[in-house]
Every structure is written in structure tokens, then in C-alpha cells.
Image 1 (tube, rainbow, N blue to C red):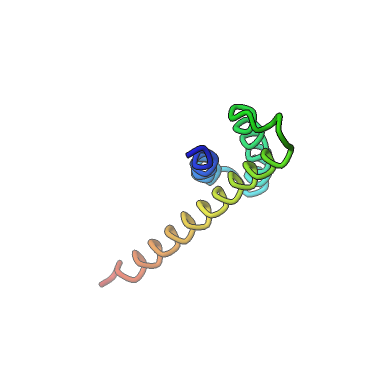
Image 2 (cartoon, rainbow, N blue to C red):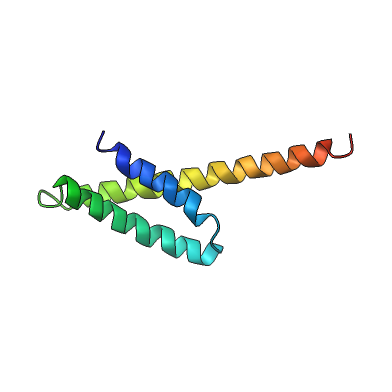
Amino acid sequence: MAELIPVVAGVLLGFGARRLPVSLSRIVIVTVSLSIGVLFSLIAGELSRSWVFPAVDSVQVFTSCLITRFLVRQTQCARTRWLGLHRYA
């Protein structure tokens, strides 16, 4: 259950960062992913055991954020194509 929290945070970050310009969103995604990964490791008490845990949590946040952004973009493109095809039908 504890590994689900960084994934959900990454999904929320992916939805939130889609409104930002591309250059700014890249910086925000990397910075916030690292921050959230370290924060969740600190809360879970994993930070005192090894430096690997914050890295793993940060990668989970980052990966789920990128997957979310990709899926949202693909859904929007498919929806736009569908509306374009059916507009004059």
C-alpha cells in the first residue's frame, strides 16, 4: 500500500503539469518528482535506512507522471480526430 502513494502523486502531478508550458513543465516535473520521492521516503522512515529508497520513490513518481501525460495526450488527440471526422457527417 505504501508504494501506491508515490504512483498516485505522480498521476496527480501529470494532470497538474499538463497546463504548463513544455519548458517549464519539464523542470517542474523533475523537481517535484524528486521532492515527493524524498518526502515520502522520509515519512515512511526509509530515508534513514538507505539512499536507494528515495531514488526508487522518485522514479515511481516520475514514471507515473510521464505515463499519465502520455495517456492524456493520446486521449485528447483521439478525441480531436473523432470530432473532426464526425463534424460534417
